[in-house]
Image 1 (cartoon, rainbow, N blue to C red):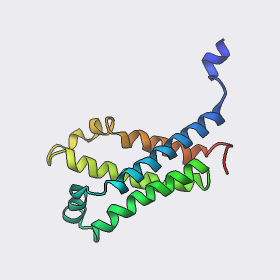
Image 2 (image 1 turned 180 degrees about the horizontal axis):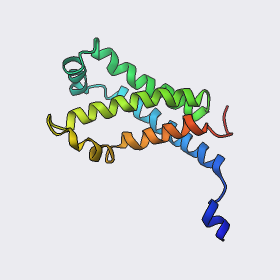
Image 3 (image 1 turned 120 degrees about the horizontal axis):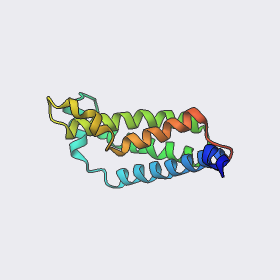
Image 4 (image 1 turned 90 degrees about the vertical axis):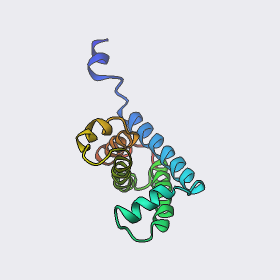
Length: 140
């Protein structure tokens, strides 16, 4: 009993596979949802006006495709650490965009409290686990 309390169940590999698979399924579903409902004009306007990125309509399709592709790689375990790094970059961008949309100018002191309540933060932690600890043993 004390061993379990100190060391847990000892199923680290199963936890890594579960983390990677759940994250991959979520990213596939999120990417497909964004592709089906690609009418987020507020996001395209922000990319064009605030961030001065070219071709926001292309990015509005390219980013969800990258999410779905990276999620598929995570589910299969194929190049999972590289997929997790790519998804981490997308999630940091999503965090910045969401912060930009919800935090008014002059209130950047609320970024830390906002970071703890955004789902991108949890997904970024999960991606970090995949690229630091590895995908687990159940890979294709």
